[in-house]
Image (cartoon, rainbow, N blue to C red):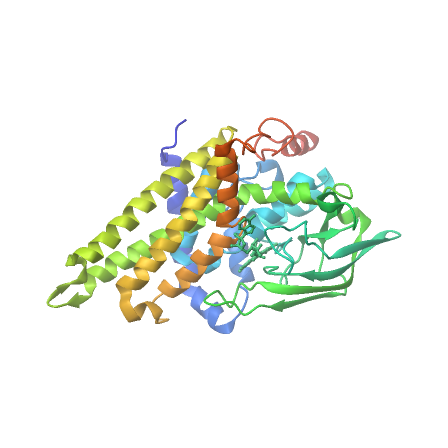
Length: 411
Ligand SMILES: Cc1cc2nc3c(=O)[nH]c(=O)nc-3n(C[C@H](O)[C@H](O)[C@H](O)COP(=O)(O)OP(=O)(O)OC[C@H]3O[C@@H](n4cnc5c(N)ncnc54)[C@H](O)[C@@H]3O)c2cc1C
């Protein structure tokens, strides 16, 4: 399996760097100061192709693949992690759920606009009862009432739920059926009453891209906006989250690299006892440990992404890559904080913010412990991580028939 980054991948990387430096970096601080969601910037990123890498052209994607998607997220997070955070809504879990669970009509109607950044997405699964066991404690209930469902309950950490145009929300339709009692719905918060999203005050995270607690009170969803059949929701959620794990790993790598680059610069600039602190051996030890972990993480992520691109079994590789990248991001953020001394806490520098995002990606989309369980159960032979490969489990976006069928219908 070839995991080397090719000239094509490097030109994608260059394109992302140019976009971030020219379009995002000059304006992001103003959006943050105004606590304003940068809708226009998302549209520009969509037009530049930053969200569509994993999706086929027939649904508005660029078909560049998982490695490209990971590299895009790596560079976005390295340069401006706050802006990278909304990839999930635009280019990953939200459109993936619609792609995997939707009819051709639903895919056609919603996926291209999300990938283009023209509509703002949402993927709301987590509830106050616990994100790591989403179906076990799901209390939000969707009650069928003729041609509509009425949804009542509370979702937690529903990112961008105040701005969402079209999203995917999970609710229980059968109280007694466990994971098989969960259904998935395409939601239009601006069209119907009963949607109340309140931003959660998060330590060190963006004020422009907010996560929320979402209160639903008889919120209406027409039956035609259900994804799949009643009871398909949990399966759709698991499929929709899977492609995003490699992009979250890419983001964590970007954070680690940002910490490393800032720490190297600072260690060369900061002079103590008549010499740059980079000359102190204990600082060198930290720099060396960061460099080694980053290179290892990059190799693991590119290997897992390349396996996905080649439709090889990749669940185990993705779990290992995500776990290692999130550990590396946390370690690099901690070491960078130490190297910066007291200045690490000053908002003039971005280190403490990077540390908050390292914590986020450690937990989000399958926490570190959840990845470890998957890796260990595979190793112990209790549950093979790739047991579904080529059978009923994960569908492969790039080889999936939905895109091909749409292309054939439109040809
Ligand atoms: C900023 C932010 C944005 C988010 N955006 C979204 C979003 O848009 N949509 C959405 O649906 N969710 C979102 N989330 C939720 C996120 O996915 C959850 O936080 C995550 O799934 C963990 O859930 P939890 O926080 O409830 O922790 P819990 O599930 O309560 O876990 C607590 C701890 O227990 C550990 N744990 C869990 N199970 C086991 C086990 N079997 N063995 C050992 N340890 C275990 C976990 O690793 C964790 O350390 C967001 C979260 C944050 C912080």
